[in-house]
Length: 156
Image 1 (cartoon, rainbow, N blue to C red):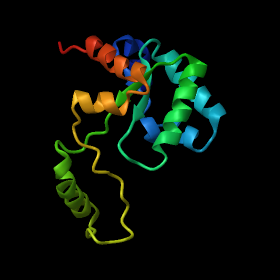
Image 2 (cartoon, rainbow, N blue to C red):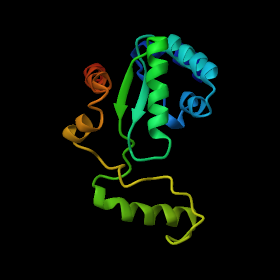
Image 3 (tube, one colour):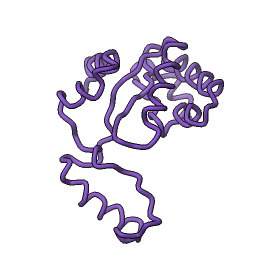
Image 4 (spheres, helix red, strand yellow):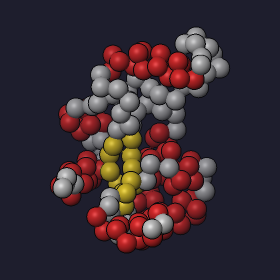
């Protein structure tokens, strides 16, 4: 069965997230193409009815707050829910340096290469509940939706 057909046949049990700034909606918002972002959000919202969330992340990346403001505005305009997530790349914050070494090895670069892309921040560690609550205290529904998603997840 084709992937699209499988999604259409089985989407009721799936939960889909927008990919925050890295997803197609996020990229459209950052490019200030709000019409495209709205069309994409409506498409995914219709495909994953009651199961599509606009993803919000605060990991210290440039443009993050501009994206979050635009995503919240889009959520209000479309009626789509928002959810707070954390793009975890390592367990503890102090593991960031080791993570950067691994990234450099993978990219065949050295740490002090001024031209190497800095795709990760030291904020991409596994945060505690309290840390996430503090980060998203201004958007409580994004936190509430993490609990709603967790309630809908099961392993059979």
